[in-house]
Amino acid sequence: MKREKRKIDFKDARGTIMDIFVKEPYQHCVIVYSNKGSVRGNHFHKKSQQTDFMLSGSMQAFSRKQGSKKIEKFVVRQNDVTRWDKGEAHEFIALQKCAFLSFVNGPRGGDNYENDTFRLKIPLHEQAKKKITDWTLQ
Image 1 (cartoon, rainbow, N blue to C red):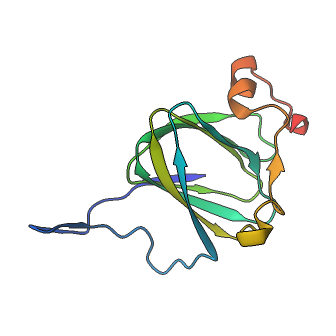
Image 2: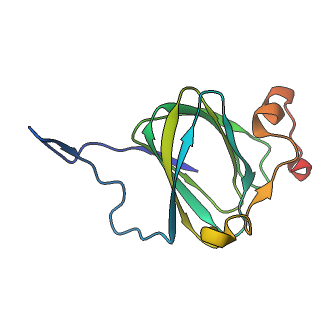
């Protein structure tokens, strides 16, 4: 997983312009709106790489790379970009009402949305609380 904070590229009296991606094509994009307390994710993708851009609000994020015992926990805020590797489990809990864009390369768009989604048996935030380190519990 890679995290970046995007900066404003241009600003004048009309407002601002911010590049999200430069020379990075994606096959699919979806916008996700979440109410405070909503849980999203709790899955991983075997063939798809996902990149998320937070438009507004904030979320508590959890991630675990395949084969790792370590669960990372961090807050995603407005203008943050988070890239999830193939096989990396991820989960979000909305800290407030929020919206984010999810860009995907791989078989995850349109009618194929669930074809490369592998749900976790135990949510990452529960694994982190109980200090579960067995990747096979997914």
